[in-house]
Length: 341
Image (tube, rainbow, N blue to C red):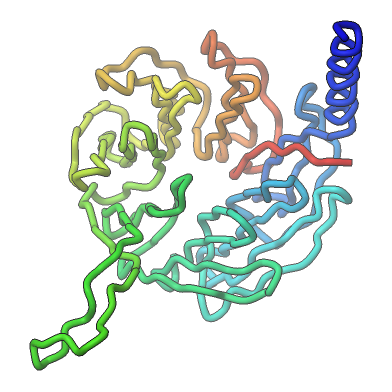
């Protein structure tokens, strides 16, 4: 019996190893200059392919099964209306979504067959059913430059930064009492309703890059004047205003362990490490004019798109040392994906 159990266990481990070995792992980087998605080997970071996209691509996300990538093509100054869908098995452009009448799509989240995206030219967040090829919901922020997007793991909250309005939108899926008619008396059989409710938290002009730690109910966002605002998501108010003294703060991300906030300046080239609990600066280096940030939990690496400098910096989060620089024309959105054979 013991030998049978050991044999079964070994077979299971072997099959799991074979299944994993049958997958391909990539780092995906968008190049604004080339209008392409550059595909890198996850381990070696060697370039494998470059998939042509629409001009000036910005953000990229993938489906849970690793089959598809979605890329926003906002064309900021030309009222763009394109999101590209890439087949990750063949590394080819599958089709383009025409987002009209919603313009300048940018921030993206894909969850359970639905692509969520901001359309900053139309001041909305859109839910799009990919399989049905149709919009299923539109939620207005009423704010200017609704840019980046975060959807909670349970999909009961989502957040956006509204850069020009200087606010963060907090949307909650809530159960509300029935609508009260002008008579002031509820009709028989009136029922509760469920709706998205928005709360706006003023965070200051230019608040753009942000990240959320759901376990702490915190949202961190950076401003170009050097201030980092910490939002209490439970009470929907500012918890902390941190003056870093570094201008041009653009994007930030919380490390996979939830302990450190990494903030980049697209003006000075500084990379700041802040303790999430004490809000004190732990470390600082100069890596280039950082824009997009991706945290690679699998290998505890951080990828930073230094867009004006035409390279991606890779940082070892354990040592905070630079691993390498990857030359790419105006890199922006970055993610990783595992694709089944």
